[in-house]
Image (cartoon, rainbow, N blue to C red; front, side, top):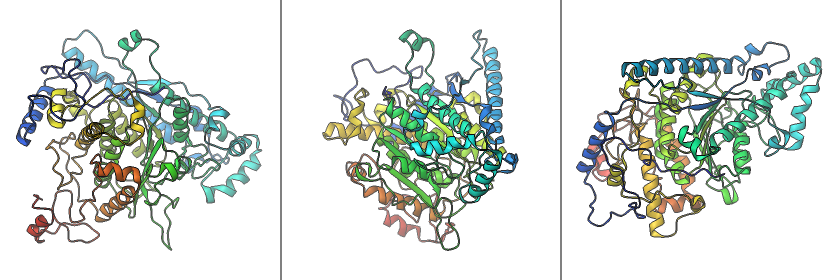
Length: 587
């Protein structure tokens, strides 16, 4: 089954604005007869009017999310019984699951109180997470990506004696970060099965139209699973990983025709080398990784792969994007810039019908391994940005990968879950939940009318050919990236892009510091390699995606830097000269 993607803006309209009559959608990005393009001032007035209308809508958040979790996955560990002393310990998933259950209880109590205060006799559902029974993946499912030899090697561990398991762990823990006990094989199968069944749940059609009308489709899921998977390649286990859970979920979707274009975003601080290897020549999967990459004589950050030059091979060239951070300490600002300037535009242009997140949280501030500084708010903003970019109806699954501070990973997954549930980050702002879509007439004023009939999913497998197709794709991509970027404005806004003046969604958010200059260079390097790939070069030349370098002289606020690696502001720099450099743009 191929999920049909609905454009952003086609959700139910806000009260007070008429919907576009049926049959009046036009198939070109040009205005219809008698219509005129809005000036910049008129666009801002339209946005202001829409914002006021949305603020009159009462809060009725009822989005539900599938959740896969099973205590049996805690049984995997070291044979010496000291599982809690290892970084990848059973308590990781217990802590996350417990935090999500607290969230469900708190949201249920809050919305119940709101309904009672409004005198509404209808009580909102308190079940915001829909539990998915977890089963073990079958051998045939595992061998969609893994070799028979690899499956048999993992399976053989279940038959080893305690002494043999100790010896195997001693031999592989130091070199591969692998530990083995009698439950390792079963736990790995459960983790894989959880991811596969999450994809099945979010991509299944309702049994009938009557069911579809009665129950809102649940298109988002979280798999709280272990052991993780993104370092496992087709024929080898490595780095705490035995079977590649997210890759198995993607291959299941392709094999069962539930999707034809899949984006996998891996934001774990370590490169998802196993996932990259599996899909390196697959044009149906766009793999994107944000990770640390430092290789020198004294130190190599694990696993030492994920260079920006690794862009895919043969027909899949351009379907592999590595944003490789060459310094430690990358935080909300750097990740927001990478998403806004590079990842969101190409995600929107790729037009996925399934989106998977390898959700590692070892890039979070306080993690004992990652030495980066992402915050729960940053994870929330990134998740919201991607959801708004791809559209509400695209199925989304987050699969747990790394992250080794129990408190931090619990709060970070809590933030992702809030985004999935369409809830605000701060509890104090829950009464400000509004309809997120701009009304269609406002969208058409901003971007021009567009054809929303996208049933021909195959049309997005190739480059547009006609002028009409190009204009339609331009409109779609700009629409998606604009709304995605809106979620990141509290951390990053390109000071030289003439984007719409949309206020940040994250209220009271200000950047803690300027963007690291090394991060700008890392993002630009990845962008340049992507521009050299025929597919993206053509998309760029058609003005469908903007792949221009971020100017190195800029910071978050638009101030000029001194060119040093620390990226600190230098107010004494000749601003007028830099304005001339950028054609007189205000900075």
